Image (tube, rainbow, N blue to C red; front, side):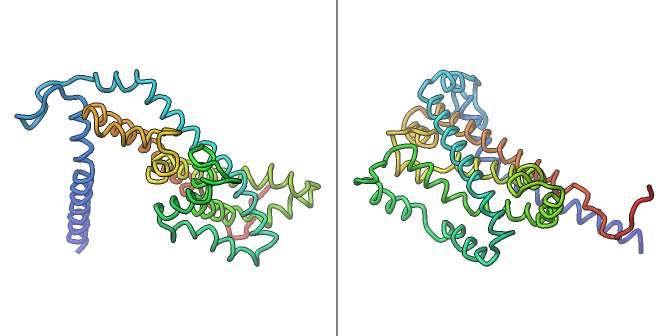
Amino acid sequence: MPVQTERRRSGGRVWHSLVVFVVLGFLLLPLLATFLFSISTEWDRTILPEGYTLDAYANLFADDRFLSALGRSFAVALLTVAISLLIMVPTVFIVALYVPRLEKWLQTVVLLPFAMPGVVLAVGLIKIYSAPPLAISGTIWILIGVYFIIILPYVYQSTRNSLRSVNAAELMEAAEVLGAGKAAAFLRVILPNMLPGVLVAGLLSFSIVFGEFVLANMLVGGSYEVVQVYLYRMMAGDGHLSSAVIVTFFALVLILYALVLSIGARMSGKKQPSTSGKEEPA
């Protein structure tokens, strides 16, 4: 019986691994084909390219327009995430510890972006911000404001989970007993313990903002060209160059998600404090 059980488990592992490899192959095949096309010199009569070159990537990173668009995308994403964390982390902390009756209303507000399609949101914002006194349409600030709303659910959920895992109420009480004020206790005790969750929220939000296209194209378009809009406009031009942009963009987003997964794995791998109540001998 133990031998048969072990064989079943081994067969199950092989089957599961096969399914994972097939799914990954299916998902990565278009990206692999795009990469091969971006480095090919000629590819129309054979299964694989007849020649290889990195000219498309050299031209891409020598293009000032691409570098400017990439810098704008990083600037928008960094500003949005920084503003969101500066506002949402203290807000979630205050509501959870001192005004818990408002938490259900806060949850309702932060979940609203899930119920509103991006196109509808963009059209409404264009109507509001294209006329005085709020005539900021086509600028970086309208994009930052929209992205701030979009990433609210991710920032809120990650921050709230981190707050639950660190026993914030007990830590605050201990810090106040030792003479720390509320602000000092939050900055020096609570926030360092929440930092892994805050980092995950920031990186996940950054990758979402960095990869968003619909709102960027509709709200700012060419007046503040980010890398997504640049890619869209290059699709009608050189196919090798546009393929290089796609591969580069995917690689950047993949790196961001890898950082999120790495930090999340470290958080889940941390040992939980003992709850047995036994004290270690001095």
